[in-house]
Amino acid sequence: MSFALTILGSSSALPTSVRNLTAHVLNVDERFFLIDCGEGTQLQIRKYKARLGKINHIFISHLHGDHVFGLPGLLSTFNLLGRDSDLHIYAHSRIKSILNPFLSHFVPNFNYRIIYHDLKNDGLNLIFEDSKLTIHSFPLKHRIETCGFIFREKPKPRKIIKDFIDFYHIPIKALPGIKNGDDFICEDGTVVPNEKLTHPGSETHSYAFCSDTAYLENIIPYIKDVQLLYHEATFSEEDRARALETFHSTASDAAKIAKMANAQKLIIGHFSARYKDHSVLEEEARIIFPETYAAEDGLEIKL
Image (cartoon, rainbow, N blue to C red; front, side, top):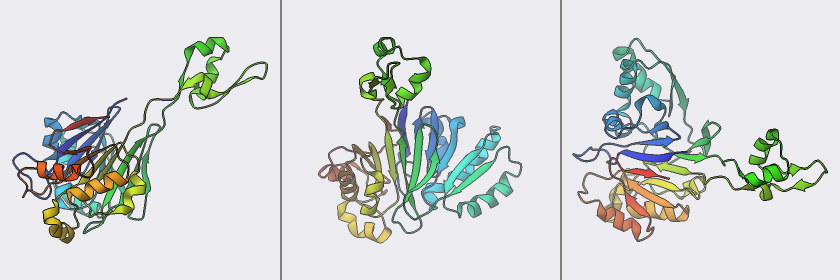
């Protein structure tokens, strides 16, 4: 099962010649989840070969332009390509008042249905679940209502040791239950513990997205032990005053959150255009959290 993140945009409010505005795409078993949609996102999707037709769920952290201006054009493109399957958009409720006038004017004849899911700012909220994955939103601290997202795979079935199937004469109908943790009861009543019959299932994967936000320790319980954490690092410590003024984080802030959350790896991004060399931000974070890497457009991280 694949679990891979591609950074489509790593700049903050202003795009640069090498950095697009915020957007990520997460591939979970060939299902593509788009997270934020800054201007130019659909070009980045094509450039980095994400599968446009496989995007059925779009998550918008907040309604600032650098995270949402690419959405109207993307929705129009879906329509031009003849999309007829439902598209789910997870965002704060005002997204409808932003998109509906555009769509009614420029895309009056829609081929597909948009289903809106309103985000809340009151703790951890389950916003998506299927047999393999859960997605929760949680509040961040920014100038307007903003949410982060945590994607976690569900525990995978245990792996049966094949030699024991014949040894204990285990019928086929019992195998699904054993994979899900059941013990096996032999015909003579003997109980064979599940741990003897199976190996643990494959490792589960997780990814947390935290942009935009000021330093906020309240999110740590929500992202605890995450494999891959993306946390904005708009500024360096030299510009902490600007970070406080704009409700953004420094690279050190991001590293502190990663360390307290016991994350395995930290990706920092949403860099201010004032920094031409982003290694200074990466180095600043690595003093606190060595497994830190600066985002680059096109960067793919496979878990």
